[in-house]
Amino acid sequence: MVGLAVAWLPGCKTRQSSVDPARAAPTTTEAVAPPEVEKKIVSPAERAAQRERLVTALTKHPEPYLNLRADGVAFALRPRTVKPVQFRLAIPGLERWSDANVGRFVVRLPNGTQETVPFDKVDANGLVSYVFPVGGPAMLLFCVGPKVEDRGAVWEKVSHCSKVIVNVNDGRQRAVEPDANVTHETGIPNEVTPMIAPVNLRVGSELPATFSVLNDDLQDFEVAALRPDGSIDHQTTNDKGVANFQISQPGRWVLRFVKWQPDGERVGELVFEIPENK
Image 1 (spheres, rainbow, N blue to C red):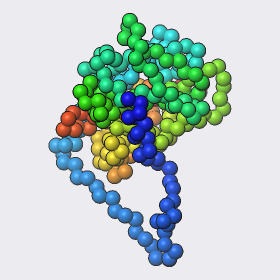
Image 2: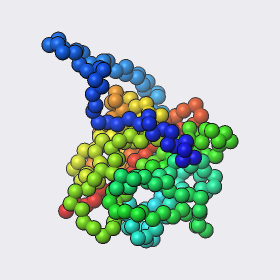
Image 3: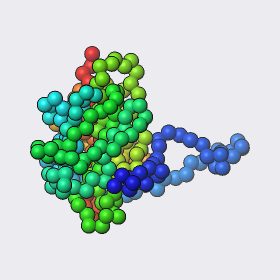
Image 4: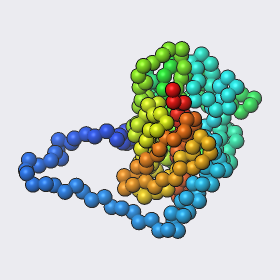
């Protein structure tokens, strides 16, 4: 399964700008018009259906799809390096790891390395354990769906993808936090990508994020954030798949989208925590 996941990485996009020498701007004073972006037309009925699916996903399943437990805390986004973290599968309709098709489960560590999180050993409570080896901001990448018969379609058949950003405590004080490479698209099928590292956000900040399925931006699409108090911030993406969210509360935020496909729903989410303002 890991080999299949890696095969997606060369196609990852990045939001950083670059210049292709073969397509450099002509040396002329004549202005060159930017290429037009074809805008998708969304009918009122389709938009209403998008919002209904999204509200259902947020109200019936407000918990992140990958549930973290540490030191008895039901959802811990600040684990410690010396203590194991337990993961519970929280996908609608899937309760056991043995029933799931896990297409990808890795952690991007703040030192620039990436590790696969083993999920083949499950304890009596149905939890998988992992110990973060280094401190600082890290990001879990998790994609899962129902079991599939065709093993060649394991990666393609995932239905839910989650990015969870944690701040691992190793007892050190850091003046400037790195972004843990969270502002780059990773190539997972259903992706929410923050354009600013959430560890640098505070109450009053604005967070732009991109939303995509199979590397295609979701244009003029209904997306939302579940605020810490349980209220929902509805937004619509622009023609580049970007939506902006006002960070109005401290606590855990969940950004999510739900896209209907002929073979079922595709859901992506981003989970992070905003600290109390000092």
